[in-house]
Length: 239
Image (cartoon, rainbow, N blue to C red):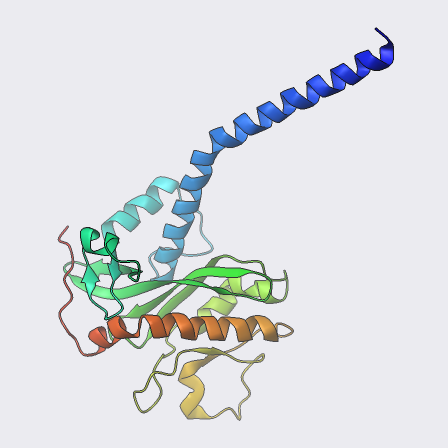
């Protein structure tokens, strides 16, 4: 057998072995990866309602404990009705929702954001007070926007702009929340300020896509938001 053939067999054998090891490692780590993704989502839900800080490091067990003590997950019908597990599994039109419960009362509710960005999907969470109008927090945990430009949507300075903003206009009608083209000028109409946040310079298209996506998501959850605004009873699980 020539040295060339031997080298070829060695190279092929090495490639096959390495491929097998990489596949095995990927399969073995998948469970850990999925667990970390789940914990990161729960951390973002907690950040949206102010139960953890974005700049601090937390142990996985701490995130799970804080989440378990304060957050309840449900699904809601298109009409805004909270659904049990059996009801939710029987319909394809229900939407996920998370409730921040303090004692026996709902302090706020959190809705997942899944919308189109400039270069891909934007995933995050938006939290509103139980008044069904006031935003308490906004987070982004996954996106494909340009670093230093649209990618600033993941930064605390941008997300903090949402706190205290309203999804209703001055007449009480649904208005959603919009991202401006850069910093809002002093001449911006005062009656519209509650429905706008400062944008990102050089990332107008990211802001435009996010504005449209937030409006679509909030409209889908408007029936349950109306129930909160009108203080209709919403059943929650006892701890």
